[in-house]
Image (cartoon, rainbow, N blue to C red):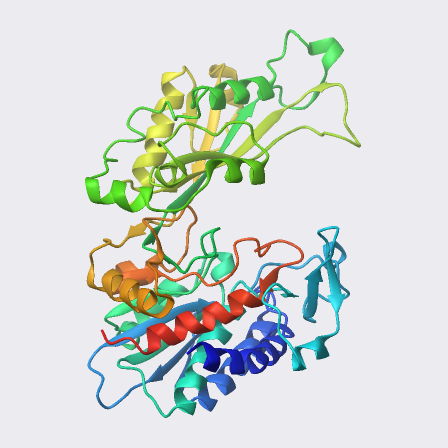
Length: 479
């Protein structure tokens, strides 16, 4: 298998280079259409029947292939869109023109000639370009694994469906509508999500679930318009201090959420504790990478911390900081927060718990901007508004799909994969899991330091090699 994968490295890099060259921010529908057209040709070349399923947003791409002796169907989920690009922040002329680099003595990556790949391929070299790892790299890995099978005149022991989501980076707003219209087209026995980075150890990884998310806005109010802090300081309430008090009341000094009921229902059996303890995390390495002296104390280790709902401030604003700052009492302070959900929690309930907590602190909570009458009546107002949220999912470690994938990877790599009970991030594919009632597992394939969502996104060539091997392992493993 390793020799076959080695022969496929150059074709894989050339195909990835071609695919990355197409811009893919979902705010530009014409770019997404070009990406879909590329996928139609690429999958048709491998013998798939392809469909473009339209909705009120952007069309979902579906490829299907059946095999005579197969009785089960496995669906693979990827996304073809990418994060926005700010070209001036990248260390290359065009983020969609993939470049090859190696790490220099100073630790910085330096461009090397693409033609070097013709004679040798160093696993530590990297290709840089938007979506090289998130998520076009994994798409190419699967396509190239299928090419390897076909070159050996072999067929997978199951039928295949491949879904390419055009708006994953925007929360997959059209996914639910497409599922409602074409639910029968997505029926499958198992769902494999190929997105996200492998464990930091770079050992083949299986992730059995992901947290969900719900966001909400908080706002507090001072004078109706900003006022001179000399004239009205000590008189007009400052909304920044009010907001700081509200938020500070929600966590203790160890980072644990103080909202009543926030952690209700979270418990770990022996099997769950065993799975989490087996993950080869290194606290010192994690803290050094984050440059933090001490971690919060939610859970006994990093993996346990991801099994609890989290409360996070993702942005705060009051008046102006930096250029344009003035000595004023601001009129308003705003914070955006999010809660990462776990299967034991539900978005509406968690937001309601926060609402109740704020009221217990003596604040009047409104779901609308306060009127003049309300501002004159209530001394401490908090405006609160939440989004619908995305739920979490978690597949049991002993479920058939989990056992099958563990066996497939263990047989190929001659060692057990890292099994992560639930990752901290959120994948919109939960709509599939719930609507189709299909067991799902994430199989991440790219290097953990790939700069996902950031400038200089990259894919380590060793991970490209491993990703193709992992895909080939799955495609040749009987269910």
